[in-house]
Structure formats: C-alpha cells, structure tokens
View 1 (spheres, rainbow, N blue to C red):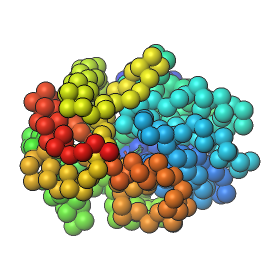
View 2 (view 1 turned 90 degrees about the vertical axis):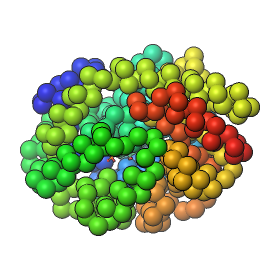
View 3 (view 1 turned 135 degrees about the vertical axis):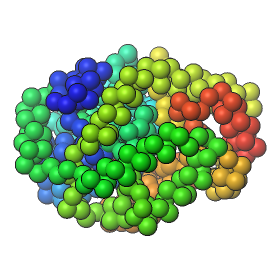
Length: 380
Ligand SMILES: Cc1ncc(COP(=O)(O)O)c(C=O)c1O
C-alpha cells in the first residue's frame, strides 16, 4: 500500500485501502472484484450522481433505484426490500450530504437476502451512526476527494475493505487492468490545485465554477467528468490509478481532517441556529443515532432557479446538486433505466434543494451572509 493508503486505513479502521483517479473508479473496482456482471442488479438511491451509476452500467449490470425519505435524503428503508430480486447483488448505501443511512435496517435486509452492502461515503467523511464511523459497516466503502467533497485533492477516490478475498480480487484487477494518468493530466491537475488554493473563496466560487465548466468543455482543464461520461459507455482509460500529486495532497489533507470535521460541525450548528431564528426548519435527523459531518448544508426553497441566479451575481456560494435524480440535468436518464416518476421524493428534492457551504474556507461570516441571502426566499 502507498503511504496515503496506509494513512487512510488507520483513520477508517480498515485492513486495506486502494487509491484511484476518482471515486467512480473505486466503485467500479469494488463491483468488478465482487463479480457483478451482466444482468445483475445493484440497488442505490434515485438521488445520486450519474457518475455513481456509470460503473454499474459499464459492467452490463442494471441499476435499481429506491426513492429517498425527505428529511435526510437517504434511501427510504420502507421501500428497499420490495426492490430486491433474485438478481440483486449489491446495495449501495449512499450517506447523502453527510447524514448516515439507517445501517441497522440496511444490513438486516441485505443479510436476509444474502446481498452485499457497499457504503458510498463520498459525501460523509467522518459521519457516525450509533457511534461508529460511516464506511465501517458494509463489506466495503468508497470515498471521493473531488473539488466539492469533504476534502479535496482535485480529483481522487479511495476504496476500503477488511475482506481479504475482496482485497485480493482488487489487487489482481489493479495489476492487470489499471492505467496511469498521462503527464499532461497530472500537470494540469497540479496547476488547478494551485489555483484552487490561491483564488477560490466563497465569493469567487460561482464565477470559478462557470469558468471551470467552460474550460472543461474546451479541454483546457482536467474536468471532474468528461462529456462522454454522460452516457453509459466506458472510456478506454477509465480505470485509472491515483497520481502522486493527488496522494501527496491527500496525506496533507488527512492530517487536517479532525480540524475540518470540527469546523463543519460548528458551521452546521450555526446554520441550524440562524435558520431557526428566521423561522426556517433546520436540519432534521435523529441526533441520538447519528452525528453527521455534512459536506454541504441542504435547504429546500420554492424558487431554486431564481435563488441560484441571484446568488451567482451576489457572490453567494449556493450549490445546486442534486439537480435531478441522476445529477446533473444533462443526464439522459432513460439510458440509465430511470423513468420520470420513479422516485417522486427524489424528484421533488431535486427541484427544491440548494446546498450551503461548510468547507474550511466558509467561516462564520460566510454562514451569516449565506443565511441572510437565503432567508429572502421561501422555504419549501
Ligand atoms: C454521492 C456520490 N458518489 C460518488 C460520486 C463520484 O465521485 P468522483 O467524482 O470522485 O468519481 C459522486 C460525485 O460527485 C457523488 O456525489
């Protein structure tokens, strides 16, 4: 294991960690190593990023979507069991925005049907459920270090597991099939990380995102997703390893993780207080069961489009994900087996939810400014 992988295992009590170019690559490795293949079914919430669905399709398996429950945006456990069929191989427990899933219920249902559980911790680094870290419940878990994630190495993903057999299968895959990122990709990513550290603050984020998307389309930067990833066709160089630039940055970020987590919790509490003061309903979760480390603070509003437009010109950092059940709106959802109406709560959340910043650069002043801005709108 690399130094970054070793350091990661000790934070997450895992025997093995495997680093990749992106989290979607980590999920692909896990599914492939578990033997998921043609006609198998993989269950996940219908409120996710399409990049999480691609690895399922690349393996000729079929995604099966479960609607969410409206408070934590996680898979609605009441609807899970009816989605299980003899073809179900895996349930992906996605801890959305940082709220941990009801792991007891998921593990029980999965156990009854002999189905593997993988945890998607891309939005929940450090969250706990019944005092135990998200990422330590399933057969395996994976994490993302893309720009919007709990900490960033530009792009990056990690899979962790305690299962020797699964680890051996991933080792074999990596030895046989994995490719390295090109020199150009790594150099561009290193430059982007430098720009990010120097220039990206809450007030400049909206502008930077617009510029970044435009530059991605022109091929001038390493984008989080390329155009070909909005269709379920795997690129030749998809199965890519993590570069040294990402790993070095990850080692540094991991050292700052405890501080990052404290900051996120404090800022989320401040949002709770300030929003309550404006007569908004703040976060709703069972604090006796979970202690979330939120990646962003989700709120529902009636005029999402208007708020996003005004926020961009006012220099307020509002996130719009998830914009549709399989984010982003460019996704041709039918190609991924999603029909409109399949997950009504997820579709409603996609129309209503904007998310507010909690990252280490968003301090009390940003939180207060963001609440002042958002509370001009009506809560949905
Ligand atoms: C919940 C979730 N899982 C997985 C991913 C994929 O992460 P990555 O961009 O590192 O491949 C995303 C993407 O943003 C995501 O939102």
